[in-house]
Length: 75
Image (tube, rainbow, N blue to C red; front, side):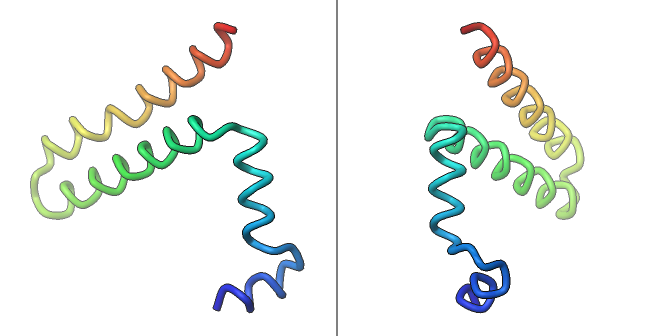
């Protein structure tokens, strides 16, 4: 399946990922994965009926992204 997508796009997937990681940095990639996992967990909690817990978890994603922006522009 991945080979089909690679041939469809014309650029190898691992090459695109390496360029992305080099461009934004390893730590930012880790933080983006954390944010993505928080969003997924929040959606799971919301759909399982724990709405207040989901809202509490959902507030952390933009907070982390804002902190990342603060550290980026502090330099």
